[in-house]
Length: 456
Ligand SMILES: C[S@@+](CC[C@H](N)C(=O)[O-])C[C@H]1O[C@@H](n2cnc3c(N)ncnc32)[C@H](O)[C@@H]1O
Image 1 (spheres, rainbow, N blue to C red):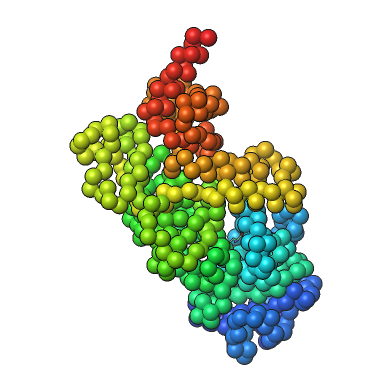
Image 2: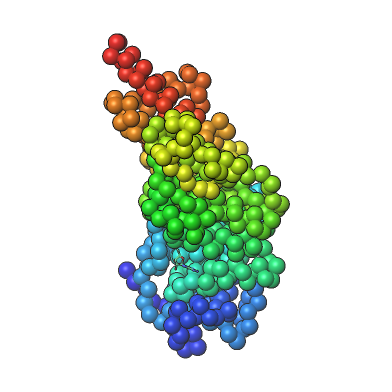
């Protein structure tokens, strides 16, 4: 299905998109909730409802495409919108649910919500921040001005809040707001790959106490296949680890923690979410004013390929890293990555509030078992047990080290709990457990279980 928009002579595109995006500080598209859209977008670009950005009126370019665009209607949580040929993944809906819940809680506790959706695609997140989180004001930015009319039409469906569509390079739009000392409560950076250049500009444009929702889709770096790349992007030399998908989250948080420190701030994760499609690593961070003079949660992770145990090393242990299985020599079998975030991935209290809100909104119990938002948030709450360290143990890897069949997950977990260790399932890997029980001890427990099952 395709639809076309009427083109007004004065609003034709004549400049290549890239040059517009790269050069024009003025490529904004001011719109207001009260403007009605049928199949056209507003032709008066002169009324800026944004209290913040004031671009010279004579340079404002509207975004009416003169060509046909593809309309493809989708529905998310009952909201209909058009993807308009923009990058859109239905599988990312859970990530958007989590973002909206966190944004709504922020609005409830702060009284107002100004959102910057820096890489908005068709504008689905912006629409949801307006309609569901009841944002007072949303800037929906995407570097590709081809999506302008689609974004505007989608946002007009929100029926509440004010909004503005811009087509600037993401760093540029965030830096512009920062330069004007106009800050946001919530910034969503849904970027591709491991583009960490957005971290600094997003933090600059964020209020203290505000929330920053960041993304990485760089599974090669988290998997330890491109250590020089992860070093350049996040300042972490990442090597292959058996829990690489959790490392992806820790790499991203660590990179953000480093940027925050440069700005005299620190970050705490409210939740960290891994989704296998992509893969996608998403983290919701709160930016807090003031440096923490404590590197407790930012250090090195070592994995011993010989015994399978993991270790955390602090900065003052640099040069003395070894595994107890080969002490006192330097362990050749030890593979060390870092610096990475080694602290908590989530804030259990915030997640509990998010779950309660999801229940209140009727978002719980209406999804499939595999895509259950309730199940996901509950798993994240379980993972937040402060006794649980980084990483997880995959049961097939345990079985291969123990040279036995993989034990049933529930049985194995309760055996570990009975021995006094902490344990939870992982939202990242279905057949894995997070535990403070070392691999060597897990092997003993698994073998005991096997003996018991043979005897019975
Ligand atoms: C992952 S998609 C966004 C998807 C959208 N947030 C959603 O949830 O459906 C990334 C978007 O960023 C835009 N983009 C890529 N690089 C950009 C940049 N440097 N500045 C602004 N937009 C950019 C692309 O045009 C694309 O639409």
